[in-house]
Amino acid sequence: MKLTDKQQFIIFLLLAIGLSTFDAIFLPNTNFSSYNFLISVFVVIILIRVLYKFFKDFKSFTKIDILGYIVVFIIGLSLLFTVNT
Image (cartoon, one colour):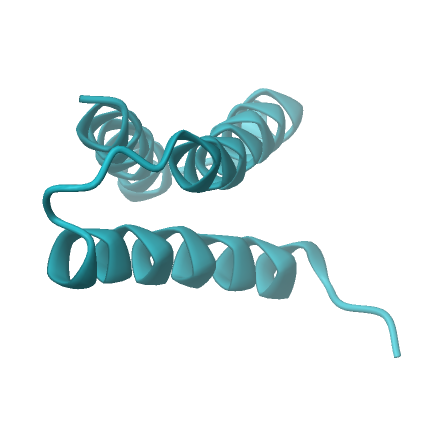
């Protein structure tokens, strides 16, 4: 069974959010750099996929699609900066 791009994106997004939530709840005062690196890798993969899809299909997008991609990109960047602080 092959996952579609949308399914892969959702899985990566849920993993990144789940890992960062676990980090915030159960490891609030630890400096577990390999764990933060893993979350950062997931977020960077998500952002690269979002940018690739955005520029690949740019001409067929509506204003709502473009706004959605901007929101996802901003959320991804904020998640990336939250993890690395």
